[in-house]
Amino acid sequence: MTMRVVTNILVSLAEFKANPMNVIEKSKGETVAVLNGNKTAFYCVPVDEFERMIDKLEDLELLTVAKEREFEESISVNIDDL
Image (cartoon, rainbow, N blue to C red; front, side, top):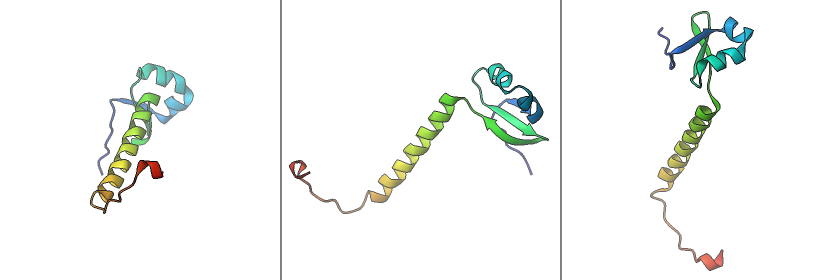
């Protein structure tokens, strides 16, 4: 089974556990893959990148809802009645 790693910065779990802030500082804002053995255990993702990913997921969820409702019958509403 092949392993897909989505970053160029790799550290061992032992190195990360020994000094996580040092790993983060050395990464200079890039995502870090933390390996346990030769397998990715988790990714350490910068806050701004994580927030972008969450925003993108929320956008995709809203797009799904919009597409589901695209062909539903519309209802006329007077804004003053709201």
